[in-house]
Length: 369
Image 1 (spheres, one colour):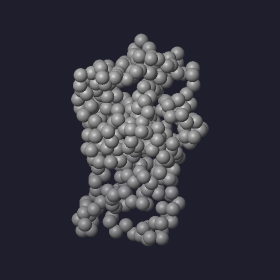
Image 2 (cartoon, rainbow, N blue to C red):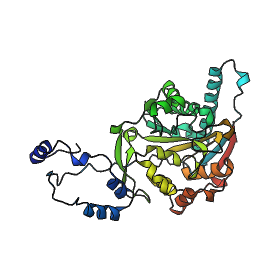
Image 3 (cartoon, rainbow, N blue to C red):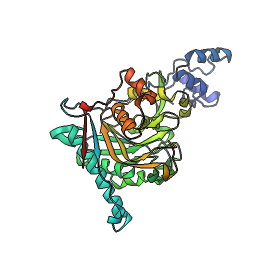
Image 4 (cartoon, helix red, strand yellow):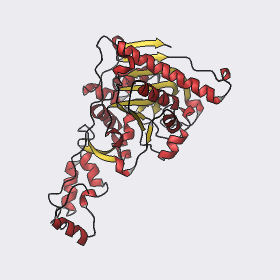
């Protein structure tokens, strides 16, 4: 139960079945309230007689206040770029004696690419401009589907392990890798190889459980109040990093770093498909990450978000790292997916709401490693 009850309330709970109405599971009424349909809720409550006398004796018992995410961003020198595009030729399989050696080379490549970007943005402090001694870092990959990483529908595992090692190298006390997949979580973390990569690098792997969700205040356009979120990983977090693939999406046209935060939503999140651009734009208000990585070494060009055929995958050999999801996504949409930014309505919404900025050449540095 969410707070201490009076003796009368406890007796009524025992008499009426031992259920605390404050702990009821999610209902349609709650969905409409939190998604902005307050008027409909009140009408439904009156019609259904829900404003009847409180037979439970629960008046005055309120759920705990909603949690809020902290601002995990860092302040960088204005003379440094806030977005870095890193290109690198991929390791060639024929140059390695085994698949294991090739995967190790890919991880080293990812490590070098991310480190180069952070050093370009962080100046003399390099990675330490983002991660400090004692930090607890949450890494949010996209592990939505139980797909092989070669299909480019999920975050590449070698990028996850590389970033975990970078964080520990900068002095992080703990690194948590967490996502709330659409498919079975155990299967998703196994088939994408993200779970294995995270554990091998020394991170704590956190998969969703019912008790790990809490009401999070968003106060946005689509989630006007609160929504049930996968909050447990963020309780002790001091820094947050998003790592996403770059891919096509049948509803919102593109999935990059901003859409990645959709994985934090609790169910029934599929109801937001009716206003997919509105909910994604709310993530720019909800989450202020330390930095984000768009891993465009492999691109899912068609049939996203799930893909399923290597024919839909294209080599990109590029990573885009930045502090503003909007700028990173805008660059990737145009330069990697070959789409116009205005095709991606949620990016226009974020920019018009003043929650992010389009990328500009003067804020961008392109390097090759």
